[in-house]
Length: 490
Ligand code: IFM
Image 1 (spheres, protein in one colour):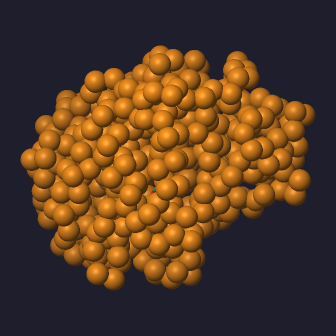
Image 2: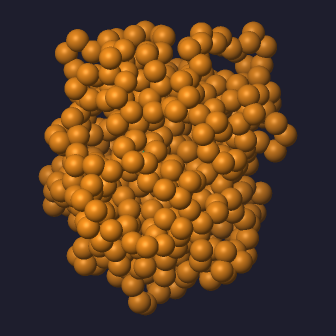
């Protein structure tokens, strides 16, 4: 993708003509690493014996509110941008919405029993802002808080540690009507909402996550237009990046001020990028800035990388006056408020060609943006260790959708995917990465955003007509990994 053409999204990966299909070995350089990545990364083979994880390693499963809860207008919940987008945009593959989704609002007990059967120590889920504060400011909806209190009690009864995401893309529609994330005030609205949540649940010992994947929400939602709220304005997307990061920082400060139990941090989706042509090093660096350092640097270093500032789409404004009106004095100090945990969502890698376009260099899952490359997980984690200050890391998402031809519960691809990624995680721990847990995306088949119900990412099959849950083979396989606290070779 050239920076100026909003032709690419993680849902619409372009396979450039002539892009190198490299069945195995990492290409040229690792994008944007100030130190070149070890050339032998791709040569590692897993040991013939099981790889054990440290005692206390958190095995988990993840979900998000809009994707599973349903009950979109029940018990006082207000509308979110996703309710509006799904109903009116015509951009959901199967014309569906999250109105019912997996009906988790009514079936959470069944789902929590599944978690118990699976044997996880952690469950990552998100709170729906419009359920707690229906218009995104002002009045609190007690029934919304009550619902989440039930969930927290239900997890405690089952001895499962909560990992709570405050925002997973379901912005209250009135906040969007007031400008959404491109509007600076949204960061303050968000911090107020976070304050409400911390006031209600601050005594719960949890891993708290401020925002999920600010990159995808900003770029897909405000630039590519294939996610809610469906805008196609790259400048708005750049502002949405900054204001989400500001909201993150303000929320970390609110967390500390309220003395909330547990630890707090962001969830960033990060993507190692490699040049598909040895001459594409500069292009690769630019893409790396947009994919990774635009988020890691402000949070962990208190600065924006200079190559994330410029005149291309997806960059922060180069014009000093425009930059100063977006990134105000003190913002970066706020954004870099010390965090206790870094959530990393890892799905795969990207290639970059001479034009600076993102191209396919590894096979994809049925989600075409997802280029599967397990060693990239090791590359990414060791890079974070090498280039940033030490912070405990949780892999907060990792997974694939079922193969297209598959129906039901036989999902060998998911088992292979998870095995190879668990092995790379174990390898990273051996290399000294402070990785403390791994949450599989997802516990349940769910509403996969613009793909509706056409992609099934769950360890558990959901029949969306009857709402019957059936654990897939990967569910049973994963439970043996959890029980052993070790991943065995194939
Ligand atoms: O379903 C999404 C999730 O909401 C955010 N991370 C990626 C997943 C798969 O696309």
